[in-house]
Image (tube, rainbow, N blue to C red; front, side):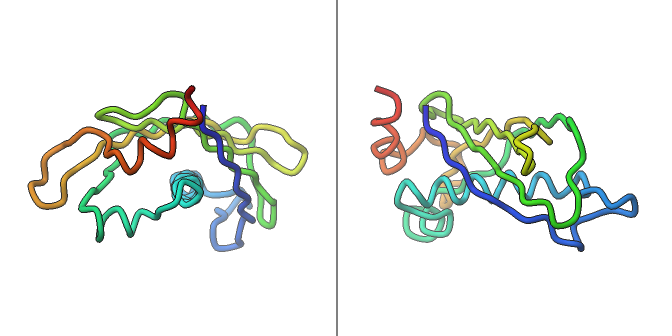
Length: 136
């Protein structure tokens, strides 16, 4: 299993009238976790798109809201790949507050798209190769 951790501090502009992290911003936090996880594998989304011609659109997003996060909370985003990607790549995500209590959890499923043909393709070797060591 592949696991990556990153931290995000809740900014004032990300909160709602009640002072809670606005629910729509969790999707952005999921993306930050994914992007940073990919970076640790040796490439960025931008490199995938511009140099490799592979896009990764979101196919589905599921979340559960356990407890609120507030302005200035330091959140820890855990991003997991529980299996090697094939046609799809599904990231599990758990977000914890500073007290190590679960705030939010869910998953996001993406597919691989050839930028030229706009057709789905299998997970590219440049992604599979660095992931193999986590699944042996």
